[in-house]
Amino acid sequence: MNIDQKILIVDDETDFTETMAKIFSRRGIAVDTANSCLEALAKMEADPFAVIIMDVSMPGVDGIQCLKKIKQQWPLSEVIILTGHACVNSGIEGMKGGAFDYCLKPIDSNELLEKIELACEKVRISCD
Image (cartoon, rainbow, N blue to C red):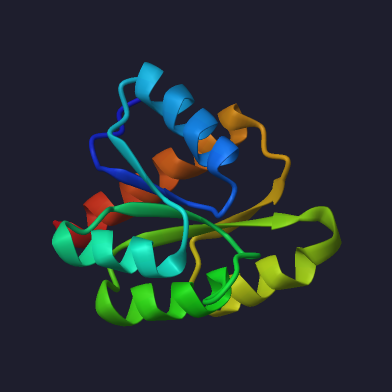
């Protein structure tokens, strides 16, 4: 797997972000986490990420609203939306709002890694 861009995981469930960060780090992927949209936007301002993995259901600014803000300011960054099985419509709404793809939670880390690699490839092509 050749992922050389930084990944940001945004989810209000700290256990989830920490677990996914460990999985990605063990595979040599540069990863950071945020527990809210506002924290994610602040991290993007400081040093933009190539791919953002974002939960839809978060207090305050939800994942769909955050996706729109990210795509407005950083159109070349790709966002993968995470949604629960009962909220497939929000994944589809995210796709309409510019998300690269969406995944249902609980997510298989290998499936997510494949989507991340494809999103990173799209970012590389867009930046060339």
